Structures are given as C-alpha cells and as structure tokens.
Image (cartoon, rainbow, N blue to C red; front, side):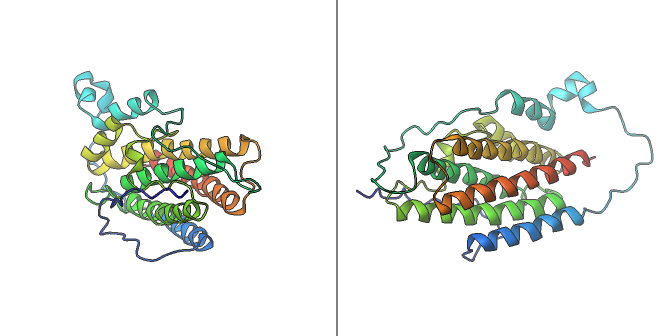
Length: 255
C-alpha cells in the first residue's frame, strides 16, 4: 500500500538565493565544496576601527545582558538541545522481504527530511535579518545542498512506497539538534550581528544533531547498506563536519 505524500509546503521565500534546478547527488557535493571554500576565502570587509577601546561585554551588566537576545539564546541553546528522536504520528513501516534497506534506513530518511527542512527555513531568514555577507554565503550553500537532498530523500521514499514527509514536517518532529519553538522565535527576531552569532551557534548545534543521526544509523543492525542511503549518510557526515569547522571559525571572528 502506498502512502500519499503530505500536502505541499513552501519554504519561506529566498530571493537572494533561489534553488531553481534539479541536482544529482554528485553535483551537490561539487557545488557544496566550491561554495564552502568561497565562504571561507572571502571574509567580509573589516569594520572601521573604533576610536576608543571597546566597552565591557554586555554580559557584564546584568540588566543589559537580560535584554540581549543573542546571549540569552546562546545559553538556552545548550539547555534545551534535543537529544532524542520524536516522530509522533508517523505511520508504521512495512519492509518487504528480501530488500536491502531496513526500518532504520526509512526512519533516517524521514527524519532527515524534517531536519534538513528546518535548516533551510533558518537559512531563508538571513537576508531579511541583515546578516553579513559571509553568513549569507554560508546560508546559500546550506540552502542549496540541503534543499536538493530533501528532493532526493523524498524520491527515495516514494520509490520504495514509504510515507513521504513534506517540508513542513519539521514543525511536528523533534530530532537531535533541532531548534525549539523558542529558539526559532528568537532567531526570527534577531538582526545584524546578533543574528549572525545566533544563527551560527544554533546551526552548529543543528549540524551536530545531524551527525548524531548518522551515527545512530550506522549503529543500527544492517542499516546503511543500500547504496543511496550509504551515499547520503556519508555526504551528510562529510559536508556538515566541514561546515561545523567553518562556522566555529566564523563565530570566533565576530565582533
């Protein structure tokens, strides 16, 4: 029995970096590497030097620290990080006899669709939030690669007659590293450098959650043996590990 896909859901508009073409997985790897290198090699222009020494950090003044969304959310990010999988409402999985894929493979694809969809939603906040050029380039790279992988995962699930989550599924799933409702609200309200700092902090955590999902997949008996699952899991692990390194450098260089 085939499960019908959920109704389509449109990501927030991304006028600065639309995804308009279908990509094969090998193309995504090439595009991702080139864009990632560009994001590392082309820092934004340095701000004009301050005429006086920098004031003490905002966190040193309790009343001002409480009003800083970036500092408050950075702490909240650690306290509210998801460390579990929650896929309530998903239909049961039936695995035909003799196939190479497992239930863990199907759940990985379904969960990663939601995980990627939230990351894409985050990237499409960057332009309106006044993010720096470097953060915008990184957001473009994440958008391009993960939106493309969502299509690949949805196609894989349809091919094997499994339930296909749509791009709104992140609103009802809780996977490792995903933002809470409060995290997302704070990100949506942030602007400028505060947005850059919060975006990088939360996206690092988000990527680390994806690596946890890959590790869980590899730890499942007989999982990740089907070729498309194996290639995707490897791509997620390789690409997001590299992006975590880039984001940590960018975070350290913020004023």
